[in-house]
Image (cartoon, rainbow, N blue to C red):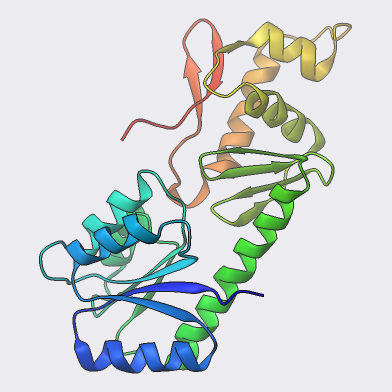
Amino acid sequence: MEKPVILLVEDEESLASFIQEELQFEDYQVIYAKDGAEALDLFAAHEQEIDLILLDWMLPKVDGLTVGRRIRRHSFVPIIMMTARDQISDKVSGLDAGADDYITKPFEIEELLARIRVILRREERITQLKETGLTYQYADLFLDVAKRQVLREQTEIFLTKKEFDLLYELIKRPEEVISRDDLLNTVWGYDYFGQTNTVDVYVRALRNKLDEDGRPRLIQTVRGVGYVLRQENE
């Protein structure tokens, strides 16, 4: 089994050296960047190899938030933000910039290693789901048809049967506007005598689950027509 590859981005050399030694002791491969610009260059060169990024916030040349946003435009590689900033607003900013987790300096190395293990286990699980050939993916949303399982940002979301069936119809036709009547007929059946606002009620419940914790909305309303699975504009 290949060693997981971690991109470590930290400008404080003594801390970077310590973290790198610990990671290598735990059998991780480490690619090191001392500033934001170098991090972006190294990620571009090794994107297919990198399994996780440890990203400092306060970096020379390009700050960590900007690095996270740029990487997140085209990649869902897990990112753990490392910073001395410990206000709730700072944590929110880091997560909004694309971080999957956030650890405040100073931290114990055991905690950092535990967070890495948790995220890599989630990634392995998602990879296994995708390899079955029975999954759909759109943005950070994964749907396993056989297991009737839904993941968003590596977190499992529990849906009712109708909510799952509704999401299934949307994710099969991403970025295609689907009318309420079409969804009603497909999910509830042609002999269903309910009203089209049934779809609205279920979409609202589905959004509440998918968009929890401030995640960008994925199900967009097309007024007078229906719904579409599409990423919210930045």
